[in-house]
Length: 425
Image (tube, rainbow, N blue to C red):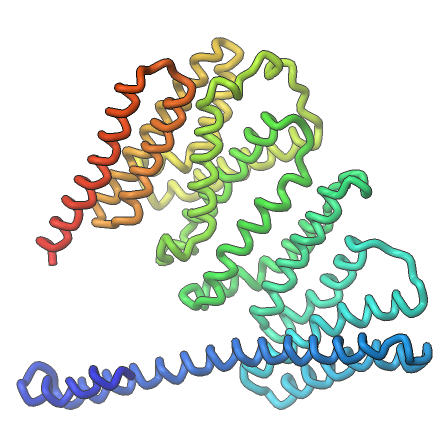
């Protein structure tokens, strides 16, 4: 508990602002929070310590590796794995704290990887990086539930992303689709959903809120095949899906800055819309593009999922201009089909939607006195004007006046917001 705040409690009691009973409860509450914060910090340092110990052992063995016999090498290959299993078993049987569980789980996670790689190297077992990563992740996946370990969960998520990237974007592998990545994500979801229900305000859950959508965005390109226009459109569907996931009731009480699905979805949709508002995107070859069956299937699944989420979310909320982001995937599809009628209609509609989204964010920021949302809306409008700077034939005087107007708008809106917040205070 903050010492200065603690010193103020006797003064508040003396002046009759609070009673001694309330002061005692306040002190107990902050003391308990202080203990919890210390435990969380100790857990983080415990995990870092496990990583450093594991790396130190690997470096020592690597320095003398060539001098060992095959039997000695094999023993050393399995030694970290045995130590990790003993540590995990001890933590579970003795019902140790989360610090023990997280630290031992992290150590065992890397011990499994080192044992697989060393045995493969000793006995010249053929394989590639993607198969090695997949075997490593699948062997460690049960640890997430056995230890209820958030760190092992995030490690599995990170390494599964590396697996998808390695298999799906590697030219030598023939750009194969990493279907097992979906299996790993499905295996991790029950643990994550349980965290959302019971630990949604904890920082480790916030980390997962950002790692999961980031992993999906990075890996998604391995499931889509085609020209860059197809990537942009299908990614637009993905960002619309992510945004609607962030609007689920599970995230209702989560702050926007802790909701990675909402932030990634919103930012991605704006980038996709801005790209589609440029003339160069709708080139002469666009109508001749052929979308492959796999990409078409992915698009249909995403659209159906987004519509399902829209219907589910709308049971508890009403339409507003601020909620236009939720319909962006459907609007992207509308823009795409309008190109068959007239390419300029697609461009005009994309510009109108972006403008409405920006104005909606400005209004929402003003209504809620939120500087972040307000400036985000202003940035959307600024990005739209900047793009029109390059693909429209305006004089430099008009362009300059537009940028001056935007700058004045930034200053004026933030000043008025600050004035409003001070008045409310």
